[in-house]
Length: 120
Image (tube, rainbow, N blue to C red; front, side, top):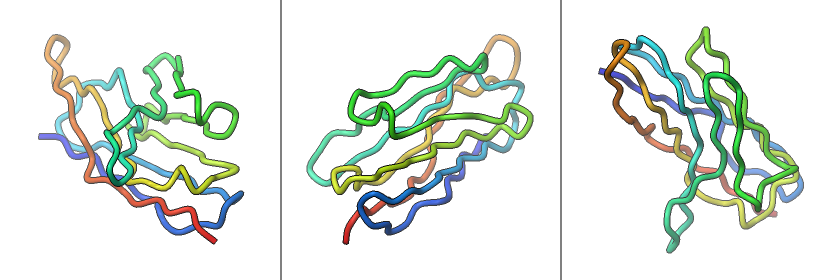
């Protein structure tokens, strides 16, 4: 079994910054894909950013230039540095990962979510 544990959410003023972390633990052979999603009240969950084990990244248009995703493969951890935060960034942020338990099999996992609130 694998667990994804997020941390780093909170309340921040517009223009401020937060850094989210997500650590994977358990039966892990390797992790290829890791991503951050968010779900705002009344809206569907959306992909914010993703990163492969090789470092290739992808961002949704609304966060390009403001958010940076990175990972530490040795620690099975993914980060999301969020700068210039806007009220519309307010949401529950979820970590997601494709975790390989061996060379051939993988399963997709979600974290429990961390609240990010941008408000003055």
